[in-house]
Image (cartoon, rainbow, N blue to C red; front, side):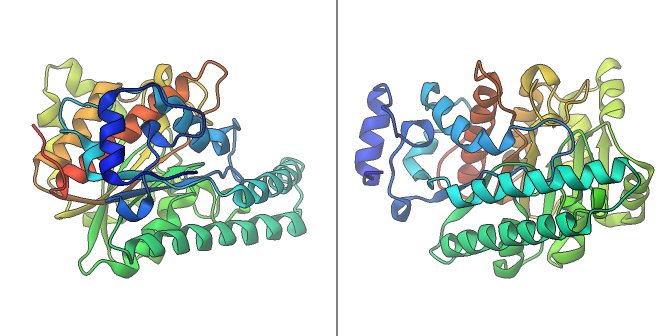
Length: 353
């Protein structure tokens, strides 16, 4: 890719010219060295447990984002702070494909009451390679003074970024997690770094994570709900049924969300699984679940973090599905741009209203 300077990037985006083939996120071509925020695409889906296709999401989101208009209501000209999406690591995508084939063998064996240890070991080693790759990419950018976001891929994708923040932040930080699922299973289906285990692993491996606050949860195991309960002050969850009941009784979103937002510390990491939204916004995500947040409710939740004065130190967007009509990636690209604006506004890089 031929990069632009930030000055050139702003001029091109403000002209609103149609993007051309090969352009990056929102039609940009910004040199990462001039960006405030660097996006790391992670084409990974080794351990998905239902529908496939999310490994294609980073490229699909990049392409679909070309039809976004770059102005937003809350966040004033996010692109002027500099947003750059790295090129997709094709070697990771190839490894994901290999690991996925092995994972299917593991799952088939489990369904027959057997164990395929050789295939399981391959998947776990591949997932460790993924974590190291994302960690190294994130550390490279953080050490250059950049903010970092991960664009998955399944929800195992961002562990390397969270670990990088854990190793570089001077203060503890909380995680705001939007999802249909707790993702608190221990080694789901035998996979140490399963997409369903991301926050089990995070809470065990990242000592600077002070607490986990979850929204939209509506499909979960007794193991996970008990684990969340056992976290005590380190865990809080607004279950979707509770949220829907309060909305039906006329309670405002702000009054529903604030008791949970107020449990977060000054520094916050945002983790958004697209299946936290209603399925009409993510029909091809890997594990869709009825109900969930509407798009505008998610947008408002993210903005409430900014409005509260908290600082967003990083984020991920995961589990965006593959679809022929591009709808999933269309929604995903808009959520991603909201996350970009929110982080930059919370860090004082742009203004907000």
